[in-house]
Image (cartoon, rainbow, N blue to C red; front, side, top):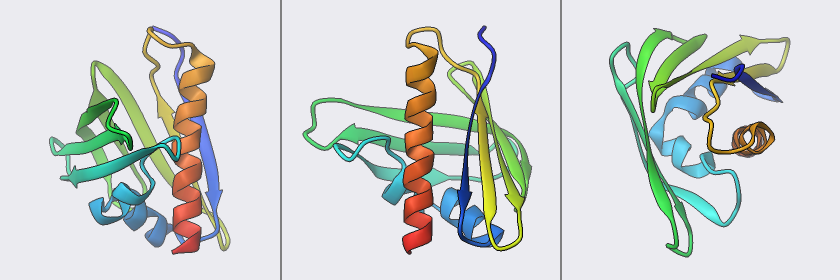
Length: 136
């Protein structure tokens, strides 16, 4: 297994808003895609240990899509959570800073795609999240 990959963003919003926008399905569908030719038409989130996260990710032209399904292994409300998906783990940390909030996502890469492509994709999704949260 490769070393974990970390992506981060500093959001001009308080940590409660960042938590809400990152975990609430009504917001997830508005930012959870790496590229404007994709979208996330459906999301569900049972944010508790043993709970399931589900997001449908699709190309807008209908040419490709997949379900991202994860199970939470740890949840510290307003601060962090860890989940498992496809035999891998990811952790999301939300850190309060003065008038901003830093969000850090660390995930275990898969072996099919190059590390830099995986990092760029997850960073693009996080950048979409930042933009959505700051403008809504």
